[in-house]
Amino acid sequence: MKCELQGAIPATNHFAEAVVTVVPRDWAREATANGPSTPQLLNEQHLAAVRGRGVAVLALGCFIAEARKKRRRQRRSAGMVVHSVMTSAEVSAPQTYYELLGVPPSAGKSEIKHAYHLKMKACHPDICGEQGVDMAKLLNEAYALLQVPETRSAYDLTLPSQNESHSQVEAEDDEYDLRPVWPYKPATKEERGQAEPTWKNRPRSRSNYNQVREDDRGEKWKAEKFLYVNPFNCIACRNCTDMAPKTFGWDNFTGKAKVWQQWGDSEEYCHYSVLSCPVDCIHWVGREELQALEHVTAKATFENGGQFPCPMSNRVGFAVGSFLDPFQLAQDFLRTVNKERKQARDRVKKATGDFQRIRLRIQEAYRKLPLAVRQLAWPRWMALKP
Image (cartoon, rainbow, N blue to C red; front, side):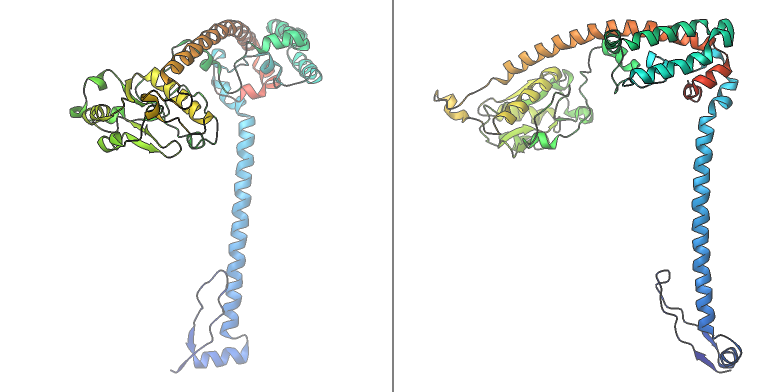
């Protein structure tokens, strides 16, 4: 049986390759005489397939949208499902007067008044009986306090900031972290002198303390000491970078040596780099002193535009420019930081006490309310897990 090669269907966006069909010649002649040709049939099949895929994509999108709507409905009504099997002690509750009224801290008087009326309608003692007495008293206190600007600003001082939870405020009583390993976040703009350095309560160099092999550890490692380069005395001899290249590097902004990674090399090579410095500008320091030294150094570098006076002229008594002592600057800075930290700790303790007392009263009154009242007046908290 003889066959003929029909023309190829032009490629479309959906098919990159042409479709070639081999059909018997007799069949092709019969199809041409009695109806549409084979390419026409294939074109129609192709269009039908494209339409089918479009319908499938549209149906999938509709299905996803409906699933999202269903999840949102489930979240809004989660309190009815989840808390039906929870005890009253496990129910989430508001913690502040703002959360009790359901308004943001920036709400105006009219918004606070409207929220107060809504909440009072739900838990008034005439509606829910004795179970709503304590909550009604708290609502009256919250409304009276937040309507007066003086008492409202005083109450706002007792609240945690927006970017920290109350548990984080309570943790401020502990001493800040001084472990030999800290999170490293490079500040490229500050290192290039494009932004003023800010105090981050951690060193600016990277720490490889825990990665040092046991046979490379020594007394300095046990004492948790770190290296610092004084840029006011550094003469850019490159001895330290040759002895410990994984620890020291070159600061292109200042043209001085700098510690990029603490304990990048063994203690032996790090100690050799200290001994090889001809001007004694490399020092072993502790964690607290290191972060203060690196901060005051970065700030001085930003202020002088990365230009330090010649250290050799200072050594021979012909100083040109202002030479600063970074160790004295670090001591003054630490003294100021410790004073501010103590004041902040005392303020947080006082604020935490007021906050805790109000929070406990709100939780106790909230848990006394019937479940239906909580679902009606505080649906947000009913939908949250404890």
